Image 1: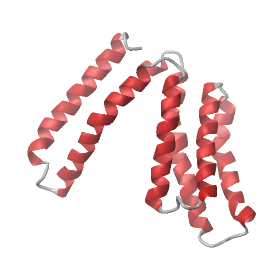
Image 2: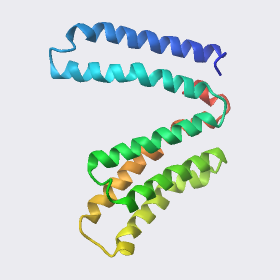
Image 3: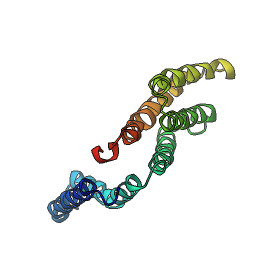
Image 4: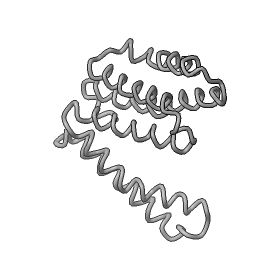
Length: 171
């Protein structure tokens, strides 16, 4: 993948865009809360983008492994930010759903991949019954499902596209 002209051109184009944005935002980085946030976001992409380009340049299955690890950490961060990381049953169900999606992508189980949100939702809805608890469960169920959809199912579409022939060049 590293020798592909399209991969190389995309990387160079992205680098030019990020450098151009940095040159525009840098003089104003401490003047307004909006530019402070924009500068912080841009600095994070200086670190994240090379890692993503490197990860997607590796041969299969390493991009899928990298996406699975990154998605799991994203889900963990979401749980910590929303304050429900202490509810381990919801956390582990979302993690299992993420790992099951990686399994589906690796073994080309498209039908199961498409049904995975409903499977995870069904398992999440069983947690209050198994725990025999109702306090704040609607909130925990909703946040867990949102976490799975945004961090898991949504991000894994990129890994699914990668599995197509020449899919990595289209990301």
